Structures are given as structure tokens and as C-alpha cells.
Image (cartoon, rainbow, N blue to C red; front, side):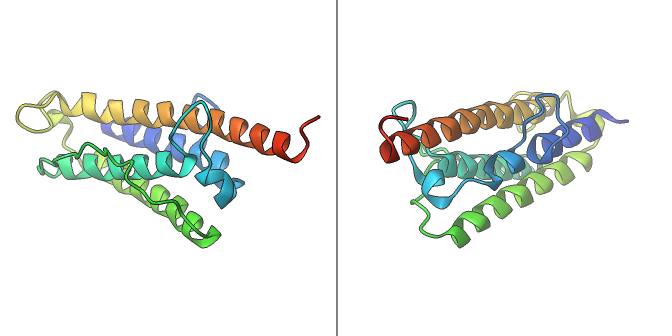
Length: 164
């Protein structure tokens, strides 16, 4: 198996399952309500929804970079998202995230492996560092989502029953 295929598979595995951490985005967010997705905690100003939006944004930035486009990343860094209002909007965000992961995996598979050691763009680090870094980035934010999910649910339970 080629390195590009392995990296692409890692992207899909952290998205949909069968990765080494035994946790994935799809399973983590599938039972989260829109209220939970929009909730902040004392631990983070980010919500699960903004983290998912940020990952979707970065998946697409990486695809553009692989296509030779030097994306100017604003200070908002993909966290610039209004709160979602409905379960339908939440479902669409989850679907868009899955779609963006598949877009990135497809682009990675299509990359000529001889380019992995070259800068992804002039002035940037290697394509390999960017692509492997994308896997690490997704795992990092997945960990945040898992923790935020637990904190949000604990906070909601304590509001409903302060003696629980």
C-alpha cells in the first residue's frame, strides 16, 4: 500500500471508525443534539459544532493547498460560525464534515508520492507533514469533542437535577 493511501485511510478511519484510538467523529457526534452541539463549557469557548466546522474548513484548505492554491487563512481560522438553530442544520454540518473528509482523502490518494517530501506550496513544509499533520489535527479536535460532550452532558444533568 502506498503512503498516500495509508494517510487517506487514516483520515477516513478517524472520521468513520476503525482507527487506533477506537473513537471517531461519526460515532461521537451522532447522538449529540443541536442544543448540546451549541453549548459552551467552562473548559472551552469552542462548541462541538464550531470544532466540527473548523475541521471541515481545514479539510478543504488542505485540498486547496494540494491543488496549488495558497489559501489565506483568516484569524478566525475556521471557527467563525454562527450557532446552528435546528437539528436539520446540525445534520447538514455533520454531513458536510464527512463529505470534506472524503474530499481530502480522495485528493491525498491522487497525489504523486514523489511530491510528499517537497513543500506542499513554496515556503511551506513538506506535503507529507501537512497531510500527516491533518490526521493529527483531526484526532486532536476529536479528543476535544469527546471531552466537551461529556462536560456538556454533565452540566445539563446538573441543571436538571442539582443533587444528581
